[in-house]
Length: 144
Image: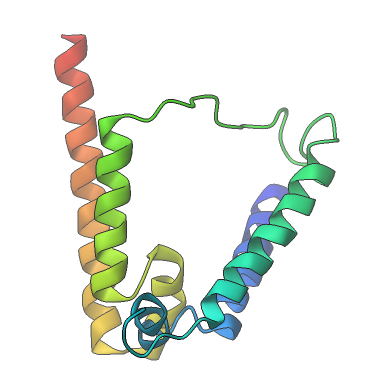
């Protein structure tokens, strides 16, 4: 129960940060990406602040034996760069650049009811489903 409440609270704080920073506004994000035009550098400061806070948080949290609501930390162990990683990053970047959203800010902007958001979120979910299906089919073919 505490794990669910902790996750909910973390999500609410994250979403609030996205709204306050302007990340839920696709025009602000697209202006950040438009270096040759109406460039808005403010999101660089948001990212730098997030990296700073996260680096401190990781140092403090990883000094613990285990997380508060789990038996052990679930940290990534792979360090290789493969084709699915590059393809996923490219697709993510194209989607972010074309739509002005990445998944977190899209969810925070959904209650505003903007037509762009109402089109983006279902398309994003469909893309996630298709990617998961392709991965499952690929794994099934490799094991048979």
